[in-house]
Image (cartoon, rainbow, N blue to C red; front, side, top):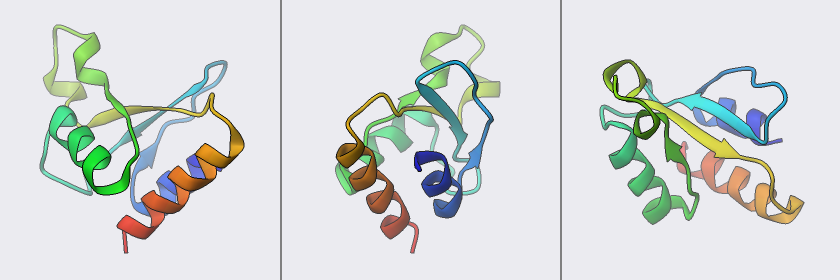
Length: 89
């Protein structure tokens, strides 16, 4: 559900297996780097993500990649999915 919503919203979604996270690239949605994009997601959509760049010393290759968790209650994921899709329109 979350992966589909991210793709519909314009993110490039990586196939993540064995985790509670989805990695998505925001490069086609904004020129902002990960931390700025994540801040805007919270303020505009009430959806939180973690920029992958905070986990590495080599930030540039990861600057537009974000980590979304789907280890939440279904209603929370449904609301986040709807907010992401609505914001992309």
